[in-house]
Image 1 (cartoon, rainbow, N blue to C red):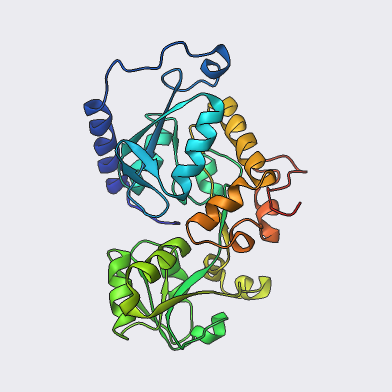
Image 2: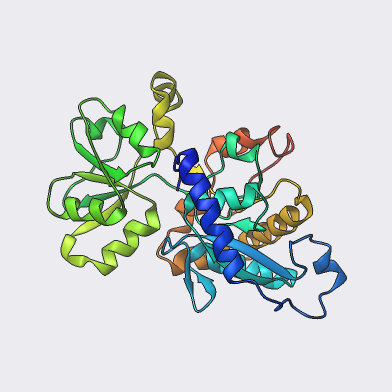
Length: 309
């Protein structure tokens, strides 16, 4: 979920988030919070305030609880740390702004690590990696960037895949307000390929079988191709992270440790499979994941979590 939003949108989202927070405030803090949990430094001891947007099957709030892949991961982590999860619903810009102004403790939901974002907040170790997924009509096969030349390519407005698509020779960009528009035109044959987050495509296959679509994973462009056309970098896998305020280093380290443990004990693979993902695609980092963060927000010898280590 790599997206671009204007300053005005971010300010509007900050207002939305603060309004939701005000409406949901109350003296319902957990009692008897342990010293270890209190030392994590959350805004309210024992409570983890989480900014999310409705983005199924990654994050959805139902009955006051966050469900979805990211929601399940965070719920597991919070239980281990003795924290009570309290969601606050906003939009994507509000999620980032809420963290950067420390109105919430954390945000989750396919948030991509970027060098710019890490300057304004802290990222955990990746809970999973997002492969370059494509929604295609049954019977069609596209594997490489060269296969996309001259096609009608769809994505959602503001996603950085817009930049990638615009760099493909002869391709025509179709940008939509949301994923529904992409799927509608894909099913109608007005679009050849839709670029969306992978679990959204997988969910649409199940929920809208009449569209006759399937998921394909693009072979990432080579380093030489990216050097020639920098916008192609967004056709590569990206690492997600849970995003926290800059001064909450203890909380970030504690959450990262729990994420790493879930890779080791098999729990992360089970959750990915629960939502239709392939652990081989979601839980093995590309080579540039480590190099992107080493010496930036991780030590020079940092190894990203992976299954099969």
